[in-house]
Amino acid sequence: MSAKIPGAGAALAAMGLSHFAKPELFEKITAPAFPQNTRRYVYVNGTIETVLGVGLVVPQTRKFALAGVVGYLAYLIAGAVRSRR
Image (cartoon, rainbow, N blue to C red):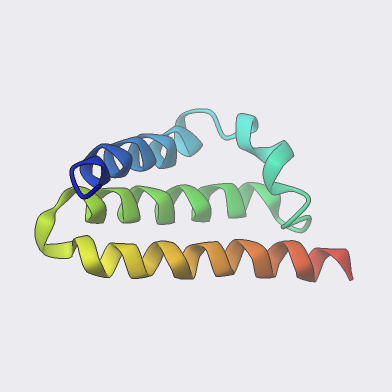
């Protein structure tokens, strides 16, 4: 399984960078969780995904990045729950 993590990290980093290249593609999926300042959150999420992806690729930072992925998922879930209120 650990052999797949660098590939997943590269994919996550590429996805993060794509938030900056084509932010409009991410606005529709970001808006339900972050209806206020959606474009800002598209960029924030892109930054987080890029950093976590690079962290997963680099062996020295992989464990820290995996913990970050868990935190990022909690952040996304909290945003979705908060917007439903």
